Amino acid sequence: MRIDILTVQPELLESPLNYSIVKRAREKGLVEINLINLHDFANDKYKSVDDYAFGGGAGMVMMIEPVFKAIEKLKSERKYDEIIYTSPDGEKFTQQMANRLSLKGNLIILAGHYKGIDQRIREHLITLEISLGDYVLSGGELPAAAITDAIVRLLPGALGDEQSALSDSFQDDLLAPPVYTRPSEFKGWKVPDILLSGHAAGIDKWRHEQSEERTRRLRPDLLKEDS
Image 1 (tube, one colour):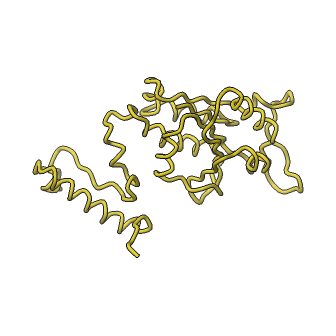
Image 2 (cartoon, rainbow, N blue to C red):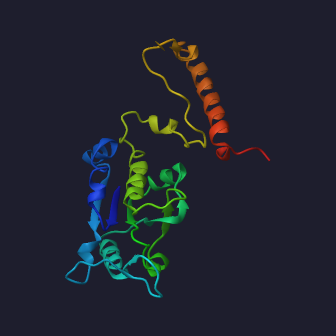
Image 3 (cartoon, helix red, strand yellow):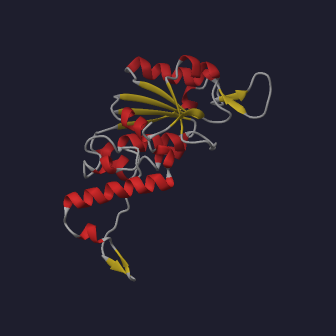
């Protein structure tokens, strides 16, 4: 897989994409991640990528030309499955979306900034708009990093245990069950007996019941009730 991230602040992405699972996936050759500085595609000597909005109003807007030139250069070199824009008014990012994107070959993620990008980019080049939630950040770099991390950890070979991702929260529209480790008793707080029993079927049943209970209590919106 290849992920190209277009950004006006690549420094914000260098650290989160060079540690832990994402770093190991890159070292194994499972994913190639490129940070592309939009300032390199600016037309003037000041490397400008933003300008005032037509019609007035507060804030600056990402200019059409640097973004267009960067995307067109990438598209001239390979075919992309999705060109993603991180935006507060995009489709809410979910585990199911991460699953779908992890099956793709090449992705572009455009990290939004300022008051947004020229609408013509959204209308003519972007194929998918993604939001992390109903709030606004200073820029799209952190969402781009979060989306990349969620996708990369699903790639075969990225995790030490191939089954680990299958038991993550939201994979089956349920929250993950509680987990425990040694010691089995601490300050009188005990691990549930079933987890110490060695009874695999019983443990699976307990975990599923716990997932359903936690989801019903904490995130009832995830449950698909029978009509």
